[in-house]
Every structure is written in C-alpha cells, then in structure tokens.
Image 1 (tube, helix red, strand yellow):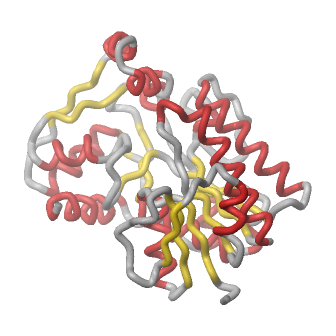
Image 2 (cartoon, helix red, strand yellow):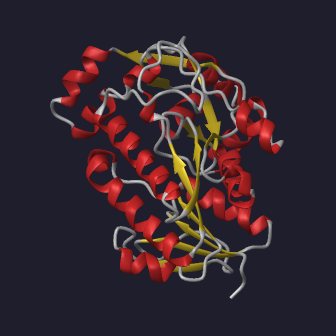
Length: 310
C-alpha cells in the first residue's frame, strides 16, 4: 500500500473538507464513520466502525502515513464521548506509526477579556466543555512528548462554508440571512468575532500533515479578517440582495430555555465567546507555511452560492 495513504476519521464538514483537499492532491484516502457511507468521490474507500474502539481504529489506520482526527461528539454528550473518540484515534495512529493531525476548537482558553487568541495563551477554561478540551489537548502533547505518536494540532473558530450546518455561522445564520428573515444570535452582535472558512480548514490540515516542522505544536488555522457578527450577517444578506435582520437573544432567555432543553443548556456556557471580542490570530501558521486565508468576501460568496443552490 502506498506510503501516502491518508486515513480520515469523521465525515462531518471538516472531514469532508480534508477529503476534498486530499483528492485534489491525488492521495489515496480511507474515510471512517459509523455508517460507512458519505457523499464522496467513488475513489474514496469507506469504512464503518466505532472510533472509540482501539481494536477497530488500529485496523482502520493500519496502512496510514497520516491520520486526521476530524471526529466530533454530540454536543450534549461532549465531555463524556469526545475524550474516548480522541483516545481511539490516537491508538490507531500510534499503532500505524502514522502522523496524527487533530482538529480542535478554542474552548480551552476560556474568556480572554477581548485579548486576541494566540497559541501561547494559558488554558483557563471556565466551562465543562472547555476543561474537557484542555485535558484532551494536554493528553495529545503528553503522547507526543513520550514518543507514542507524532502529532500536530490545527485550531479554528466557528466555521462556515458549504455543507456546514451545525455552527454559529451555519444553516441558522445563512438561510434566514439569504431570505430576508431574522437571524437569531447569541451575545452582542456588535462584538468582533472571527469566523473560519471550512475550505481553508481542509487545506490547512493537509499542510500540517505534510510539514514535519508542524509536529509537536498547535496552530491556529488561517482566518479571514475579523468583523462583527452584524457585519458578517450583512455581507451574507448582500449576496441575495436581502436585508439583514438580527435578533439578539438575551442571555436570561437562553438560560430559561436551557432549563427545558439540554442542547440550549450546553450552548449557554459558551455564550461568553459572543459577549466579548473573539479575535483569533493565525499569523504563526501563515508565516510558517505561507498559506493565507480565503478573503472573507469571497468565502461568503462561495458559501452563499452553495446555500442558494441547495
């Protein structure tokens, strides 16, 4: 089997973006999810299985040069399931002697009082999901330092793009904004907030898998310029010639709704990201690897075109 065999765990938007970038490079790809089914090119080998099971992940990654962990857990069960997914994928990569590229978010940092998010900030999470993420990150670095696996981490903010549905900048933002309906948002829509384009995430994770200097470090993936959420929604609405209508949901209302809805309760603890400036600095990655982000206007245009076509 080719030494350039790539194994992708997870077929959500990130996993599919990685697959598309790998296909563009002519790589051999195996995509892993629970069903063994995904809307991908016929050349992609599909495999069904449970990524929390190390016996399965060792089999799935047995001939990999690079393993990409693009898994995610149900939001309501994040702290219970996500660490097990990471452990399973890590075991598979380690057994194969493959590089491990891990997709992360920015929960481990907690509130920063508006300070830009750089890779060297301390982990100061105040939420249970943030503390879970911090522990998972620490475990990855421990595995790397102990020589168990060669790994690198890519991090992104709330992402948007084709096929992105469940995100702060997903279907619940794009569809109403493009049709002139009110967009409901958490927090203060006039705070700067970085949004990351999904196709840049896919390309950047491939770069991390290709570049040995990326190993043993975390990298904020390329981000377009940061605007406020209100400005972002206006740019989306402009793509369809509609007006941007924004409804900021008060935190008190979110908390009351959370008493009856577990998902909303889980969202409540993360609202701090939208109540203060949330600006992600990706200069480290862009300087090291020379890959800039897609300009924001172009990324929004491509995303709006996808939604309007679907």
